[in-house]
Length: 383
Image (cartoon, rainbow, N blue to C red; front, side):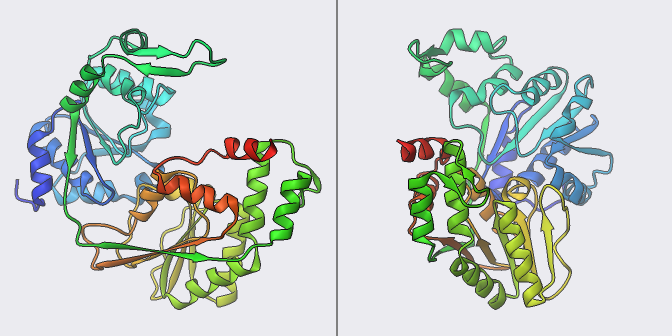
């Protein structure tokens, strides 16, 4: 094999086997390593890649495969995984893994795994033992979910819904996970510099929403805890001071990726791009545009649609107009510009935030590598 792999990729390649999870941070080179494994051990089989819709549409997988001389490859999204459930004797690379838990995608994945060779690529393989159930079943460690539950799960009998109280025989679970998890450790040449920009917010309006339980945007009573939380976020995110700081940062940087959560934030950002007369493009549930091929540009990305499956090495600046609830999503988002082949060393990440309780609670959850629970926050406020 006459292609250039980094030492950490070579080390992982030597340990990979069918049924393994190739675990590496964002930008660690999992794509090329996975393709190298296929070429070395399963080149006689048809290659199928199941990835995100964005990565499928971008052609990144085909480009990487071409580097290794692989021409016959089918790349599709997780949304279409059912189309491949009856295939036999192929080789599958499941990218940006979506088989956590026991969803429809997970059940289809298990069926494919039983009749084909495969590996999983993941930056976040699982937080709890239940996340590993599909992969454990696909490897033949357990017959089904019931078998896993009977051996390892103790439910809380006082809970109104199925809630896991404890896991038993964890030494076996640790051993099984170690047998299939192939980590890729490497030292980055980049440095992530996070800058938290404190912006003002309308404290009177914020307190009015808290006390009166009234949504000023719908002019109706707030119906539940989730709506309360989202209304508070909108009060904070639409304040003119945050908008001013966003415009300032977008103006002083010639190329910048901007992440946002909500449609009203997108409307604000597009308005700023037009006001500054700067080229911009969008990636969200409706628009799937590429980064502009210009000297100056602003790339507006919605977290859910664009936190995974693409990369950019032509800028070292990223702005988070608001923070996402999930640490995993934030980590994936930061990684879009933190690649092994980026020419930059210092990467700048600007977080727009405030001293409001909602912003501080979201940031605290992310810093604790957890997912912010808006329902729990809202219920606490309501009480």
